[in-house]
Length: 344
Image 1 (cartoon, helix red, strand yellow):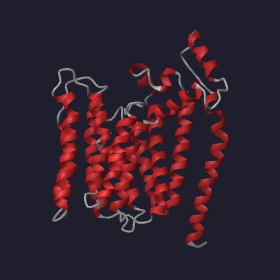
Image 2 (spheres, rainbow, N blue to C red; image 1 turned 90 degrees about the vertical axis):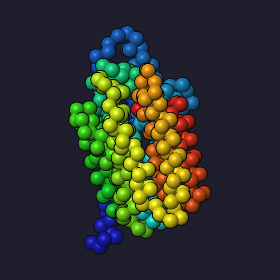
Image 3 (cartoon, one colour; image 1 turned 180 degrees about the horizontal axis):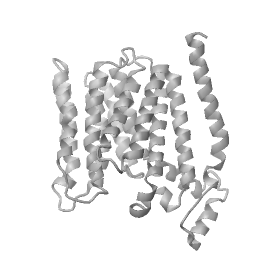
């Protein structure tokens, strides 16, 4: 069997698995609501109500859609898309026909990771975040992990369709996602795995370009990972007790430092301007925790998450100016989506 046939067989197997999952899992997702320890009359009523066959335009359908969006932290998806665009540009910005598969694949892996995050956090959420979809009874524990499996399968199928190397890097990204979801509440250094997840998004995106996974994509991916590590350590303080720690904030400056080191000559001006934009946004986001008596860590984290788009824009400081409008649009979407779906 030659290379083309081998690749085709691999893609065919993935598609077959996806079809089986669709046929088996999708029809039952929202018909297996399990409230477990919640046996009160009101919960029984909500369970029966949720099983009614609402039409697509009904309030029930919209409520279910919002549940899925909240589970997937959909407000952060524009930052995944900006990661992909930056990584693709750094990898040589070739094969634009593969971009839809890249965007779809990374989106599905991200959403699957967020779903699995709620699966692992279910006991914590039942104690401290009862508004989350599983403890609130909006969707069952079993449905969420099955949906996560479906999104992972579809995501990998899309990435393998874009290319074997892209798919293999996607598998490495998935491993980082699984490790982070499993350990992030019990291991102090788990933010390193969150940073690794975003790093691999850059590598996955760069792999479809003409230059592939090369120096610029790797270095900029590491800068983004450092920013994510600082953000993630800060986010842990939202649900943790004890004094506020300032040292993770240093990691947020890594993309700015790298931009001044790697951009020379005619690109230095663009890098300086974009560094100023990112720096001002970081300072603005940190105001609720540094210069406020009542620290609002959640507000700061949400702003820094939207700021990932600026990190990506800074990474492609050498790109045409028109390309910048795409990042401005994605940043606006991230801010807009946060009005409807919580970022954390």
